[in-house]
Image 1 (cartoon, one colour):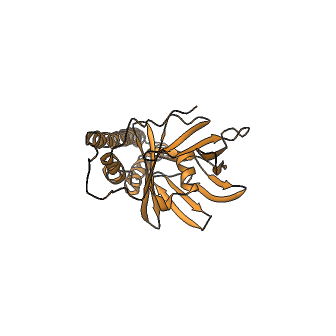
Image 2 (cartoon, one colour):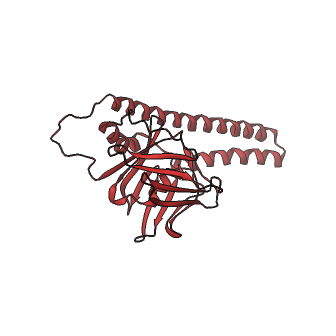
Image 3 (tube, one colour):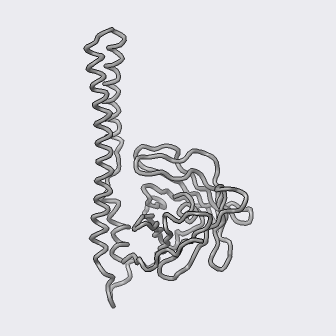
Length: 266
């Protein structure tokens, strides 16, 4: 049985604003320029080793080997430190936001009006778990379909109404520096395909997932670094706070394809 998604561990409005607007700016993903420069340095060192071996020059072989080993160690240190600093920046910003209480009787308009916030414990993805809307308590229950292992799930409301079925299609998992996500999903209801979720097979800089909504009308979404875009406009984000995974999205863009990606692929 799934745990209740920590309703006592409330996500404050300031924390929510920081997660939605600030975190993408304080983290620095790998850039193509950095990757290309590092690859060229490694290639040059490897070329020196090959030249030394082919020409029989001990000096070129030893120097090239030393440079190659040095570049590999340098790359490991730089990428590890970069990941550590990104994590440190996120923790520091979230720690500061945690101490800011919710406003009391504020006359200001609600900055989150028209938005949905779903939450589920990241470490509770067994055969059954719930995704809960923090303010209203609305639940989406995710269950594995018996007899199909981990390749198919059904998502229902708390009243037992089926939202969709999710089928894991073939293909590799997406890999990138900073995380990974499941591959391809087909989302359907009553044998009618509603959406298709396609994750890029390999990326060095950031993940990319395309969500193609087929019903009621064809619509496309792009998800990169857990930011959800529709026609190049940010409409939602997925973020991880205190062992819970949150989906924060504009209500008009909440759909079975996005829900399946959030509940199954991550």
